[in-house]
Amino acid sequence: MSSVRGTTRQYWVAIKAMIVFTIVLGIIYPAAIGAIALLAPAQANGSPVAVDGKTVGSSLIGQSFTDAKGNALPRWFQSRPSAAGKGYDAAASGGSNQGTESETLISAIKDRKAAIAKSDGVDPASVPADALTASASGLDPQISPAYAREQVARVAAARSLPEADVATLVERFVTGRALGFVGEPTVNVLELNIALSSLDKAN
Image 1 (tube, rainbow, N blue to C red):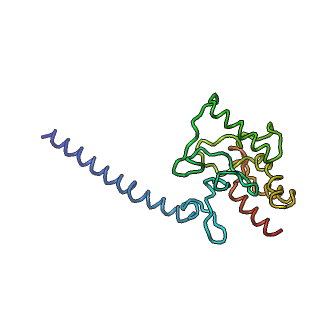
Image 2 (tube, rainbow, N blue to C red):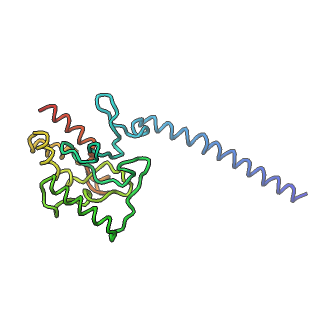
Image 3 (cartoon, rainbow, N blue to C red):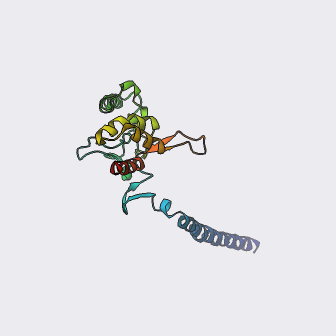
């Protein structure tokens, strides 16, 4: 008899625990997260960036600024390389998975360095690392301030804008370290290019 009562008690404990967790994790928690999302609708919807009422991208996901053949457009600041799908494919996030001794990676870095040095008119040795390698996700929307500054002369020339004006614009979009000490300063390429278009119109 006692064993039956013990088993029955265990069943009731299990049922009560299931009810409590169902309420907490199935109702209260989702409702709380939904309420938080209502307080920050832009972030909850993917942090879209709009121009003239039209969504042109997300501040969280990078994109390429190239022509139909994949050639970099001189008028725009360029993002870092991407190994996600055919480039910045959000459905295929990932890195190249190539090691530092990979001949394919080494060759790609050499080619990128030569191409960027030529287009930006700089010494190959001064090309920043983030201009040559893809991120682990392949979707990073930022580049280093060094890479953004390197592109100023090319972008200004392509748009017939004063180089000083473009340089000043870049500095406006340099974001410092998170909490003042986490990570490195960055520049969001999409947001910078949108502001660049406005600068172009103003001139």
